[in-house]
Amino acid sequence: MIRVENLKKSFGDHEVLKDITVSIAEKEVVVVIGPSGSGKSTFLRCLNRLEEITSGHVYINGMDIADPKVNINKIREDVGMVFQLFNLFPHKSVLENIMLAPMKVKKVSKEVAEEKALRLLEKVGLKDKANVYPESLSGGQKQRVAIARALAMEPKVMLFDEPTSALDPEMVGEVLEVMKELAQEGMTMVVVTHEMGFAREVGDRVLFMDGGYIVEENKPELLFGNPQHERTKAFLSKVL
Amino acid sequence: MDFRFDLIANYAPFFLKGTLLTIGFSVASIILGTILGLLIGLGEMMRNKKLAAPFRVYVTLFRGTPLLVQIMIIHFGFVPLFIGETNVYISGIAALSLNSAAYVAEIFRAGIQSLDRGQMEAARSLGMTHVQAMQHVIIPQAFKRMIPALGNEFIVLIKDSSLVSVIAAPELMYWGNAMQGQYYRPWEPYLTTAFIYLILTMVCDFLLRKLERRLATE
Ligand SMILES: Nc1ncnc2c1ncn2[C@@H]1O[C@H](COP(=O)(O)OP(=O)(O)O)[C@@H](O)[C@H]1O
Ligand SMILES: [Mg+2]
Image (cartoon, rainbow over all chains, first blue to last red; front, side, top):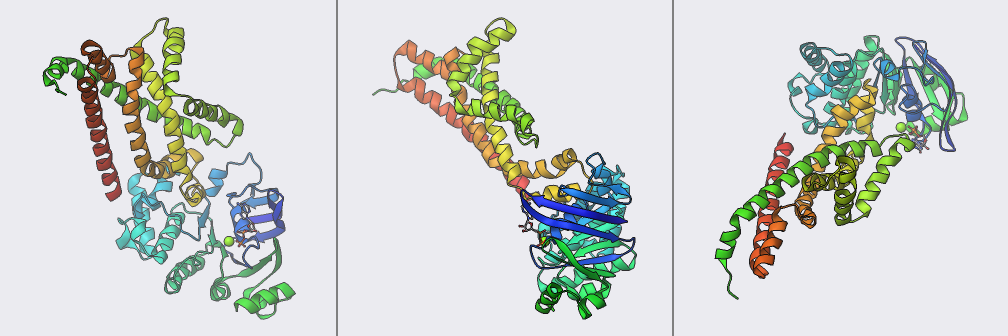
């Protein structure tokens, strides 16, 4: 599904991703953890080329998105992304937020897009908020709308960049619940998070990143229970 | 000092004609200047620096030189060059629109750059092209933020349209000058002229505030 080979990313002469090689299988839920500034967001953003790839390859369904000739818009239809700060469109209602991309990108009719949007809102438990504007929603509700918006494009993979980090603690659960449900339905997911409970319960694999490398990867119970590297141990002792 | 309302009454038909032409110059230049300004603003923001350069040069030239000089150059230089004769209406509208476009471009650029980068990223992550994201996500939001600055620019433009009196375009200021020349009295012509400009800018301000309120409640 996703294959990353020798991915490097620099901002100017600051090399942020130093040499990343990793594969992610269909229906796999991969959780990425690591200290702040270790390159987790940058790694995730290279998977849909929100960041230009400095060198190496990122294959999504066999297509190398590092190749400048590839139609990146077409590939992004299959790669949904959820941001830490939601990034909902404030000038559009909740329903319009969800309908916009299917109508403009996939040329789906208004009726079909609306029906789909309502179904997705029901799925994330916000059907009654269809016609309000994002500013009147709580953080947890905003993030659930953002998930519904990404799902409306029927992606094959979902990328989550710290989806609960900007939320008040009492709202974290409702968002994680939606994500868990998605994982159970077989969605391929790459999730950057500090929620170690979620990583243990839902993750098939955990990647620990530090200093632009994937230092260690393993099944959650092994990575948390028996970390091999000093840096992993040091990080886990701080967050667990 | 005796203030001669009867002289103003005599001149009323000319002031009316002049006011209509001032409104015509202003409305035409606001529309053309805004459209042109949006395009120039987009041009300035192109990622390819070489393609963006001519648009930046345009803005620098029109913001960096006096409107009065631009009017002269356009009226005596460019308009005869293109149409073979002078024409105060074309010169007036061209100078005011081209000048205003430079300011609108900067307002537009500031409006877009004040938006959070996450808006563009969210749109692109959904598979939208750059153009689709601009059209459906960025520009509508930027436009809302631009309205106060844009309104200010419109008011400046109404007042600056008085400068085209120097090429004898028979607008409001032109008739104010004409009346002063006829009666050799400073107060009646210029206070009347000032009063009419004030009405025009106040109406413009009122309409913009209404629009702003409507967009805010949307
Ligand atoms: N657009 C950018 N320009 C320059 N440096 C950046 C940019 N984005 C991220 N960085 C740098 O890259 C490093 C990794 O950032 P990031 O991927 O956001 O880490 P994390 O998500 O793990 O906290 C940081 O040192 C950060 O300052
Ligand atoms: Mg991050």
